[in-house]
Image (cartoon, rainbow, N blue to C red):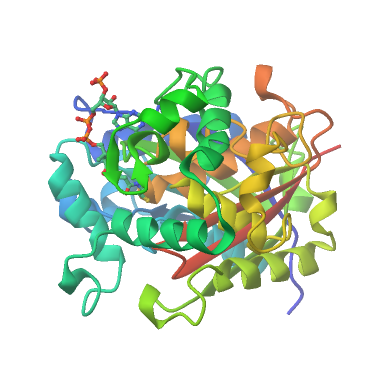
Length: 387
Ligand code: COA
């Protein structure tokens, strides 16, 4: 079977934050209708909904049908796709496969999450459903605690201090200041980072990506039809995914994200590019340690050197490899199952040169990577701009 080229012809998003006045269906519909308007399509063949915790925290499963109905897409084939924090990216990958394989022409991919009606303790306990349940959660480990263990080990192995990680959050908050959809638009300083309240040592409040509500959507179609709908179609140059052990304790090396490495390697290979060709990297900065390990796994830094890119300012909008260009998970906010789609929407805006004050100059290639759990699932896409 010959593979078809796939384009993103429409994007939509809601503001990330605490949406107590909106239901999960309302949030999803808002993003979907705005993506349909951007793409100017009149037909949808399949809807994939990326979501992690709707059953636990929004008390709604069977999300495909629920959202299709509410968004005016009644009768359209529709499914929920779940892979913890990589749910939205996994939904995009399924949409890509359907269009590339010639089984659908117009696919809508929506990521949505609605969690803030529940108190923090309940959200954190729901989040831990994405880690290994039989050994790690059973021992009382949480998602944030696993990240703290990895960070502490990284600091020990490579000799870093807490302040060395500040650059990631400072960069994210700076970029979010100009993103009207971001949750935290206040700049922060290295001093504020170092002095922030500890959550699980050494991870503090200003290192944690805030779990929030939000929805984002993209419309896909075959590249050869794209120009009929969108003057600036963005090509999905490659789509790749890999898994790793769900449990951290099963890894030979807890400081290496193997699924991130494998999916990035495959994504580069299919797109025919190298790390040095990438103009921006929307990485999964759920915590600074994940950002550092992603930079290493995706070939931007040697082992143990990912943090240095932040320390040296190389991740800023005019740096060697701009990351979290619209605020990242840390400051745009982290609506879990929606996050992977937000990352793609932001990369598309960069490649269409519609990122306003955050525009990365001459952006043409974007790498987008989403991480489920502590790297149990990683999905990587390479996007190519229209010019
Ligand atoms: N970054 C910056 N500020 C934050 C923040 C964050 N991540 N989280 C909360 N705040 C701010 C709030 O805006 C609030 O400010 P205000 O007092 O000026 O209104 C204040 O801190 C307290 O907020 P609150 O929601 O009561 O904090 P909390 O203690 O209940 O929860 C965390 C904070 C970090 C413990 C909680 O958000 C958490 O555990 N999140 C999970 C983090 C995680 O696992 N992320 C990755 C998922 S993949």
